[in-house]
Image (cartoon, rainbow, N blue to C red; front, side, top):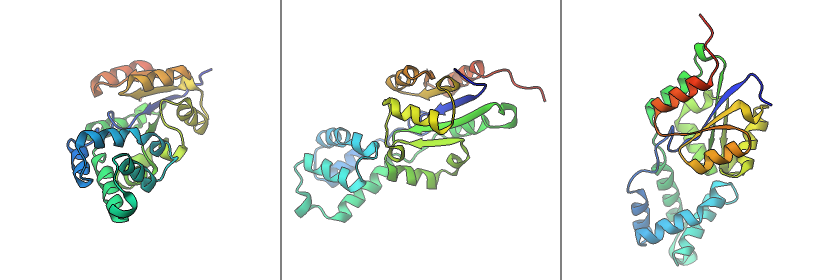
Length: 216
């Protein structure tokens, strides 16, 4: 059963942060001397264990390169894998400043009933870079990165991690994600859910979901 808490649980990429930088995969493919389409297929096919914290960055990139029939042991040195890793992190580094400001506004005094948390599919090394570059993340009530918690959306374990970590009930949460399958997965564990399209629509949904503001 829900308590009197109201926790807005945000996805990161496609909501607060931008999707991958256009052209990034083509540049990484060129570094591997691979066609962009083949590289893109390998990049995503090998991604789930990396996102879920079951592979390190070198293990992930070795798997990508091997799937492209690149002889990792002979033709690719450690610095090449590190170059790909850093390029990948940079490609996911952009945020939507208007959304960052909105997220922070939810924790202002007039919104004192609101807690704000984040649940993102992101490898552990990407998460470390994001935490270092975006200090506002440290002001949230809870931050869960898949590579750190060893569970990635839409697996129920990812959502239940937030429930347990925040000592809340699933119905206390409004989960916001731009991917419908993730929102459905959150709803399946008992959370409220909203498929994100833009800030104004989200603000209206949150204003309706929250209890009336206390008078000043």
